[in-house]
Image 1 (cartoon, one colour):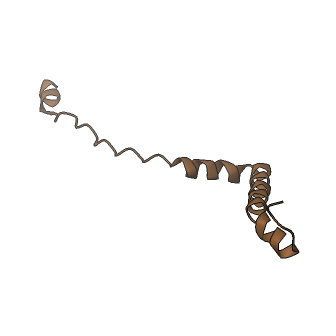
Image 2 (cartoon, one colour):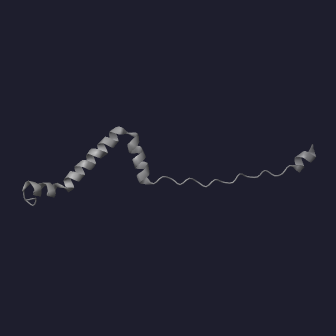
Image 3 (cartoon, rainbow, N blue to C red):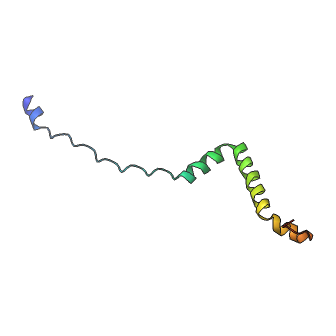
Length: 69
């Protein structure tokens, strides 16, 4: 029985797996937004308002108003 114990090969440690790269901040935000539909709708409305604010001088010029007054 001692021959069996001494003849055993030493246990090999499993190779350490490379740690998985963590997701970037933007990817985490996008994943959380997709999980919450109300947050996704709110983000879309906010994006639309920002787009309209950036395009306000163009819209005012198309109407014939002076955007500087």
